[in-house]
Structure formats: C-alpha cells, structure tokens
Image (cartoon, rainbow, N blue to C red; front, side, top):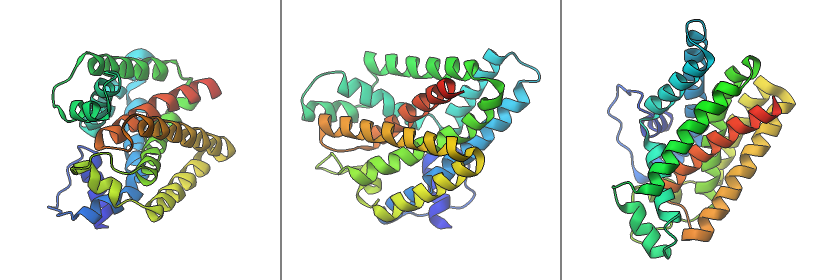
Length: 245
C-alpha cells in the first residue's frame, strides 16, 4: 500500500494526506503501480470530458481536458520533455546533452516541443469520435506510464554522478515490469478486448523505439527521458485511437 501511495505522490499533483518517507528502493519498486496511477488520471479526465461536453463545444472541451491533464500531473512530465528536447536537439556530445538536461532553464527547442505536444493533444482529442474519446482518455495515460516502466527496466541510468531519476531506474527490475504489464493488460482487455491488446502492443513498440533512441543518444535513461516518454506515449496513443477509430 505504501508503494502504491508513493507512486501517486511521485507522479501526480493529487494530495496524499500522509507523510510518506521513501527509501531509494521504494522509488524503483513503486514503478509497478505507475499504470494504476495512469488509469486514475484517465478516469478523472474521462469524467471531466463527459461533464464538459454537455455545456461546451468539442474543441473547448478538448482544450480544458488537456489543461486538466497538465494540472493533475503538475506538469512534471512536460518539464522532462522540454529538457530532453533541448538536449537531444542541441546535437552536442553525451556530456553536453546531460549538462543541458540538468539546467533548469528552458531553451528554444524545449519551448517548441511543449507547444507542439500540447497543441497536438488538443487537436487529436478534439478530432476523436464520441464513441472512442472516453476510452482513449481512460487508457492512454495508463499505457504511456507502462511504457516508461519498460524504459526504466531496460536502460541503465545515464548519469555517472547519480541523481533523483537514478533511484527509479536502478531499483526497477523484471518484477516491476511484469506487475505493470499485468495491470495494464487486465484493464485494457477488460475495457476494449482484442482492440485493447493491439493498443498495448502499439504502445509497447513506441516505448521500445523511444528507449532505443534515448540509449543511442545518451547511453541510458534519466528522469527527464522518463517524463518525455510519457508525453510521447500519450500523443502517439491519441494518434493511434484516431486512426483506429
């Protein structure tokens, strides 16, 4: 139960009424529950969507859902996306890219990445048909968070000097990947049957390709690349549902 609550504490802005102390091992082990965090976020977004469509246009509803998406997560994954974009698109060497990712300031490419990802989410969400939009909102945050469990499990930590992201990456292993996969497959199959399994397969391919790209650039994962992986997974997930629907 502690690690489940820690996963919400680390991954969302949802207030946790208990003062939970986490050891480094807890941070990695709690990644098994990241898909459940995503499912909760998705359920809240789905409820927001169905509340808004009765009083707002589809586009305004989509915009407000994306605003809710950001607020529920505290924007932390967007921060990781911006840092990753600034680093990877600087075309510096590995040391230079890791230094950029550690800099708290945002650069041009990070700002562009934020604008594109948020606009993309609004546009894709607005274009989804009514029958698939609710399920998309429920499942996409879950599958995207499952994807970063794969990234953390498969890649070493990229920073030799250590860092906050290292506690997640170094202590996540096969157990966490298996549990996260079981949670994800159970929920998706229960809601979408065979189509849902295809969606998970697609999400897994996206996650593995992104992990391979991250490894090719900096030799391993960081906290920023995990955040970027969530944003990439969510955007490509919306695209999959739009095409499949």
